[in-house]
Length: 407
Image 1 (cartoon, rainbow, N blue to C red):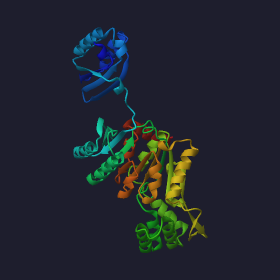
Image 2 (cartoon, rainbow, N blue to C red; image 1 turned 180 degrees about the vertical axis):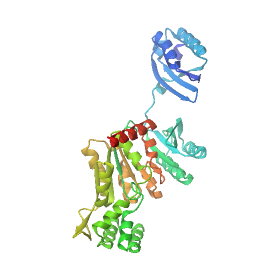
Image 3 (spheres, rainbow, N blue to C red; image 1 turned 90 degrees about the horizontal axis):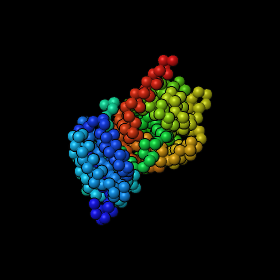
Image 4 (cartoon, one colour; image 1 turned 45 degrees about the vertical axis):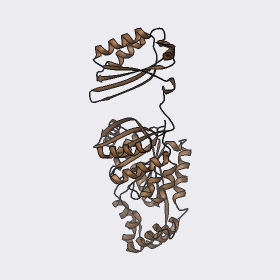
């Protein structure tokens, strides 16, 4: 090997049939000669095996011929093929990089083709692809280097927009140490944790559904802000009794997958919070029922067993939601990078935008712009894939819950 060649590192790429002793035997050859592996990657699909490793150039200087000869003989005995090439030392060990992102796709081959095309157009290079399948859900995870993309934000926006057009769920996360080290999860309540809008059910009970709907529509057109619309809607349900509120509370339906998701997250040690622009009469019940750690919502003023039509305390608006998430994370000594927030409305945008993983659940299109992931209705369990939680984690968590219930 020439001196010019020794300025480079040697990379070996091995492929063929998968067998349990392959890595042990290949690494054994290198260990026998005292050669260090500077970088290594391995993957397997069905019964096919692929491994690449980079060897220290300095250690190869005196023994390269013997090492390569023994390596070739071992590879041949294993029935594998090998390719050797010189690489620049600067290319070795690159892994977590500011321009690297993880794209998690819940879609078919057509969606994979379309989204890969968008990435290519934006200068993104797919470094690895893998699939996961559990509980009837298949996801495809792509690690993509967007370092060469001229507009990373535009690339992410195009991917999210195209996935919405295709009707598939998509998540985009930066490739950092905190991606799979989340510790705090906050849920919005109406049309997120529960499959209903509680203020609408209150209005139906009060016989003022049309009036409340008109106020909601005007607020969505921007005629007044969330606080004003909430005050007006609460005034329209004045006179509801505690028994009527309890009836609505007892009729609340959790969104599909919530119980399994919450059971798994609790068993894995996540801190869980509810934060709602709705009302504490309902969120306090959900906190107790599901075992959440935190619940924050608006207070309903009650006198003589009936709603007065007024609120108690500060209004939980978009800014308040974001402050609560931030303060809770601070109180628990958890970085914002390690938080997850799930919501569906415009008043969730601030808290989604500041979270490590902001998830728009069955949301309006505009929320995609600040969210890292967009999931359709009845796809709550897709969150487990985004967090890297496996089927074994889910099964063990559910089993533990069953055993606790039995005792």
